[in-house]
Image 1 (cartoon, rainbow, N blue to C red):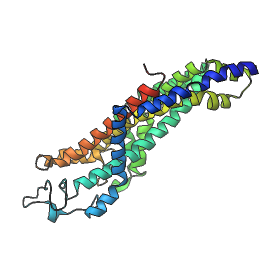
Image 2 (cartoon, helix red, strand yellow; image 1 turned 45 degrees about the horizontal axis):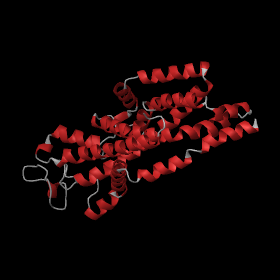
Image 3 (tube, rainbow, N blue to C red; image 1 turned 90 degrees about the vertical axis):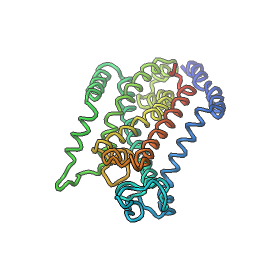
Image 4 (cartoon, rainbow, N blue to C red; image 1 turned 180 degrees about the horizontal axis):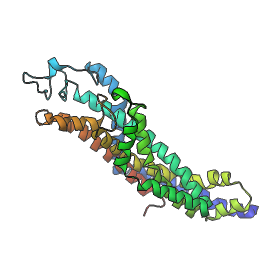
Length: 312
C-alpha cells in the first residue's frame, strides 16, 4: 500500500511546474491584465470614496440646492465644484457614484462568498457520498432553482417591512441573503460534478484504501484539487450578483434611498427624467456598473482559460 501511495503522489504534485508557467504567462496576457486593472480601479474608487468626498466637501447624501439647481429648478451638469454635476436633490453625482461602488462590492462579495460556501458543502457531500444523499441534495438544489428570483425577492422584502415604513432587518443584509439564496445552487452543481470525477482518481482511491476518514479525504485530497475551479467560478458569479443587487435596487426592493446604489441612482434618473437635462445622472452609475461587470468578466474568463483544467 505504501508503494501505491508513493506511485500516486508523483502525478499529484507534478502540475506545479505547469501552474507556475501559467502564472508567469498570465502577466503577458493583455486581457487578464486589463481585467485586473479595471477591478483595481473600481476597488480603489470604493475605498477612496470618503477621501474624494472630503476633498470636494460633498457628502453622498448632502444637498446643495443653492449651488446646483438653476432658476428653473433643474440640476447643473458641471461646475461649482461638482465635476459631474448634481441630481435633482442637489447631491453630487460623482461622490454618489463612488459610494455606489462600495455598496455593490459590499453586497456582491459577501453574497457570492456565502453562496460559494453553501454550494461547496452541498456539492462535496452529494458528490462524495452519492446514493440517497446525492439524490436528496440534488432535489433540494432543483427546488431552489425552481423559485423565481424577482417574485421571491419581492416576497422577502414585503415580509421585512415593519410599521411606519420601517424595516425589521437591514435591507443590505436582506439583499445579501436573497442574492446568496439564488447563487449557491450553481456552485453546488459545479462542485458535485467535479467531485464525482475527482473521487475516481488513483490518489483518492489510494487514500480510501488506506482507511483515511471521509473528512480527511474531502479536505486533503478532493477539495485542494477542485479549489482553483471554485475560486475562478466565484469570480465568474460575482458580476452576476452585482447586477442582481443593482436590479433589485432599481426595482425599489433592494438598497433604499437615500443610500447611494447604482440601481437606485439609475431608477431615480429615469423616474424624474432629469437625465435629459443632466445626462450624468444616468450615465455615471450606468457606466460604472458596466465597467465593473466587464472587468470581472474579463478577468474571470482569462483566469478560467489558463488555470481551470475543466475548461474546454
